[in-house]
Image 1 (cartoon, rainbow, N blue to C red):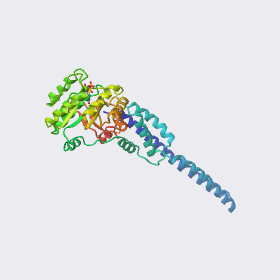
Image 2 (cartoon, rainbow, N blue to C red):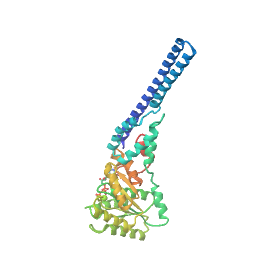
Image 3 (cartoon, protein in one colour):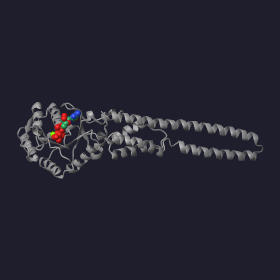
Image 4 (tube, protein in one colour):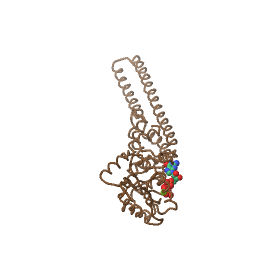
Length: 352
Ligand SMILES: Nc1nc2c(ncn2[C@@H]2O[C@H](COP(=O)(O)OP(=O)(O)OP(=O)(O)O)[C@@H](O)[C@H]2O)c(=O)[nH]1
Ligand SMILES: [Mg+2]
């Protein structure tokens, strides 16, 4: 996971650090040398010139020359990394970040913050700065199970709607969540509200069987909002804690399908609306999350297929762009392959 971005980050950190070291060495060398030279000249002049007035004149002259030189060196070298140099070095890094699925706004944010920390500073710790900046960009989610358990004290069932475009892993992720909830002693039922895609109901039925969970289904082609509604009624009657509503994949630019999703949300009033996107898709996932959030106000996202994501940029960007946390990462095809999102873990994976 994240190998590509991790390696690129490492290379860039080394590069910028070596530029910093070179400038420091150069500064030391130049600062020491000219003053030794000036001292020598001064002694020589003192010996050569006779008469107090002349010596005073020369003293002033030499002092002026020294000041001039010191001014020049300090101006140049006290700014360890000039803004121009930083921009030049960042340009390459910017490309790397974009190539690794980091969204443009996040790249600009990193640039702006990093600039504040390193340009014109005598000393800086690039690694620490990058770590802090990325940590600030990521959003730590609330504890998922605690949130559900707290809510159940006041209202039952807790309803979660899964949504997103086609084939991102919505149904698989829903089943993984069911497995997690059951493991934590919460009862669950499924609403087969993808009444559109062929075999979608049978797919969910298979998970229901394996996990020993009740499934509420209707025919293909019926209003998906009504399936959610029935499942909630079933849960109320049977004292079930959590209803998980599957939904059909839909493109965020298809207005009628987005309106249908809004209806599912309005009718069933879910406690959580979770966008399931692929972590490998990059900017597309980020744009989709934004569009779904604008339409139905997401609780957060789950990014699937993080196990095959070499880049990691989507994971860095989705939260920042939607201002909603990533709740989990999907890390494989088994029920256990769901990892609670954790800032520290992401930072660690990036080698920071
Ligand atoms: N490697 C990997 N594969 C995953 C992950 N999550 C889901 N998949 C696979 O992605 C494929 C699509 O998963 P589904 O759960 O059917 O996706 P969906 O969003 O419900 O698809 P539609 O209902 O057709 O829109 C399946 O082959 C899953 O096994 C994951 O975290 N890692
Ligand atoms: Mg599905």
